[in-house]
Amino acid sequence: MKLKIPGVTFSWKRALGFTKIKQQIARETGIPTTKHGLERKIGGAILKLLKGK
Image (tube, rainbow, N blue to C red):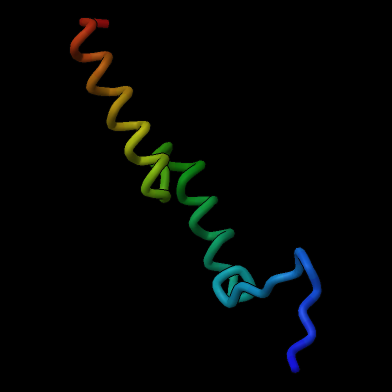
């Protein structure tokens, strides 16, 4: 039987520092590293082009 503690999870990516590196890259370049963030950024750029601003 596994003992699970609610709300406690383990991420090997976070443990090895991948999450921190991705966050730093995103902050420095201004380009999001998540799918949702990238879609929002592209969508905003398209809307700016259409509005002419």
